[in-house]
Image (tube, rainbow, N blue to C red; front, side):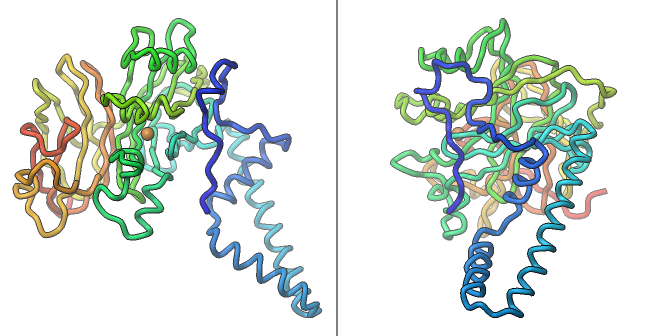
Length: 373
Ligand SMILES: [Cu+2]
């Protein structure tokens, strides 16, 4: 069973929310960090077999086996100590848990955010500067995928066809407002509020793929929000109202400012949502700078065309037809803003679109050629 962290509920809101779903352990931070690293990497099925096996051997009382187990425990302890050392090094260099600097070939500091129904797991505090939010789905879509589901069945649940799909919107909180204020505004029916400008964020990618968005963050208070379901009349489907938000504090950074890398391609979102690319997209890792020239907010998403169809055939299917393979992109590129995303492409046909239904008149087919550069 996957471990699901406690989520923020509406009942939690009247109190001060510094870290909505954080459990404060009495253990020193370095121990918590090492434990979290270990838990993240564990294969639970194997662990359970391992645990059962260990106890069975102990119960049988075989001395030689006991000795082997003691040796195994010693090596496990050594590994744990090694992890502690690595973790301590990271902390010594000012590494906030859940963030990485320059190890993932993504621009700036990488902040890992995990999304499920209905919560985000992410660091509480990060330093200011160039930041790439990398979004990983860990909710029901992962279970459905391993059970062999495809298409909409991957995320549809309880009569809601987007219940298991999550995106991330990074929102700046001005005027001393908090995530609780943002939640209250959403309850009052506000989709956007003047003191909570949206900055963009990563869209939905089918696991195990992740999506990402690079933003240059100034010190301040921010909220991570999933606005999926906000456009519907049925408010029970609105992920933010279901507790899918989290506070993020961005602290002044001591380190020198990291510049954003030169993009491989510039994608301009023009009037109506049509995208114009500055160069063809080739296989491999592409840094795409997305510029929204319009006065409307747009999303920016790639879907790979399912096998057996051409891109043209896929786009001309009825709207209710199954989706392509969500390949990544951005939940939002606000009007007049620039957001960068980094995507690994395989050769083949993709559809790029800026409207929630991917089969939209402004969506277009792009062919990714093999052998980049
Ligand atoms: Cu969501």
